[in-house]
Length: 161
Picture 1 (spheres, rainbow, N blue to C red):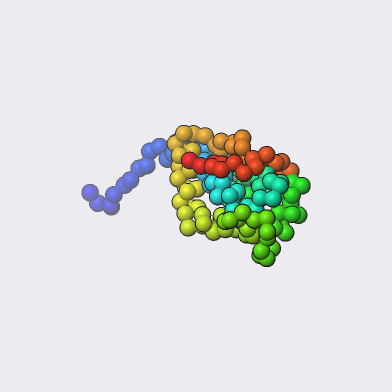
Picture 2: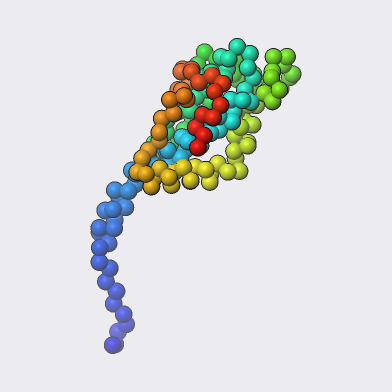
């Protein structure tokens, strides 16, 4: 056989079509992973959040995933009527008489710091599970999805697996 080897790929167009069909499913799954992991961070942050009258803990939220140009984002924070108060308490490192043991400033930052070493792996695991189940994020009814909502108070375990 002079001239070398000839390779013919059959089904490449079908493969490309299937890949295009899978992209939205992958995006939904990544959104599910991000949302689930953010809920777990919030579940860690709540017990660290100072409790005076409950407004601060009750203002925690995790937004549903949003897509923009191939990027999936989820926002986690404290807000609504307690937004200004949340920022003051989060950043004020002076001792507070009303703080329960273990609570205090930088409550959200401390929760994120605790999760930082495993966050990528957790998102990947949750996204893989969602992809296998062909689903997007499952709305957590205990977690408000925008800063203007309140509602979950100090309930532990939000978003836990």
